[in-house]
Length: 136
Image (cartoon, rainbow, N blue to C red):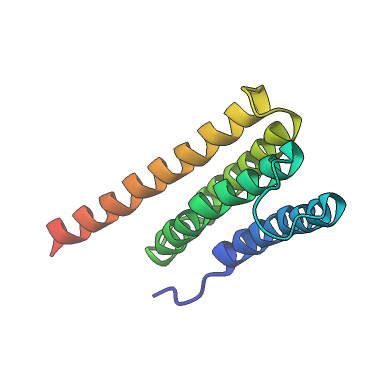
């Protein structure tokens, strides 16, 4: 049985680098606008905090689901495909929100990609459970 999570670890690491970039952006803006807590009603800081928050809301669950899928014996190709879509989706989302708080193609692509990854992983893991349950 597979006991390591090399592929999930790779994508979790890429996502961590993105998270660190989002965090550094908030720190820079806090210094720029001299805001220690909250957003100081500074639109660029509001957008940066929200982009970071959105990332934090979705990525932990996506990584957990990806890890479970890998532990369930997923093929490397599918893990990479899902991981790439997730990473690119989060990059698009951050770029889109940096441009505007309104709708943008990048933001929509990021949201759809993230939600699609979560849905696909949930379905794949539920299917694995049902398959195990039925074959037992």
